[in-house]
Length: 113
Length: 113
Image (cartoon, rainbow over all chains, first blue to last red; front, side, top):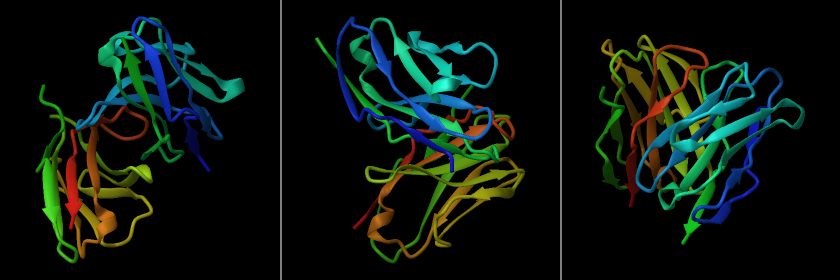
């Protein structure tokens, strides 16, 4: 069965430091992968997506993610974190039928000054 | 371009009642999906509609139902409400089918007393 694992429930990073959020997926074919961010009381905002091609994808707000098929991973990175990046981050994979997203449990990012 | 609009933002109901939530997709988007978000279960897929037809349904009881209108607006209904139905209900729209990014609304927060 398809699944997404985000091993880190909560991460704290100092402002200006780099960030990497981990995501591992279980999927039989070429996955369609997404990262979303959710601020308190808000819906999900799409940060970036991977469908095919270049394994390093750029997103909004300075985020990028790298698809590594050999490790079944799609980790999200940002070189310098801003206080406004504090939020919950979700990794998702499109299910095999292409009809729904399967989400990880999310990683809460706190930014310290 | 206006985003996905969900109404109402907040609802309080009691056990046994029924509720209807509304979602207006981004203009031109024809696919609408619904998700339930709870602290314990995370984000779970409810169903997807395209061209007024339900294309896929998640693992939820029959008390959860939905429909889509000719203008792509969608409603979901939950009957005989239970305490466990307390959640954030998110609607997402995409231009068409299969692996296109979904854009989410801010959700309806449903509380069951």
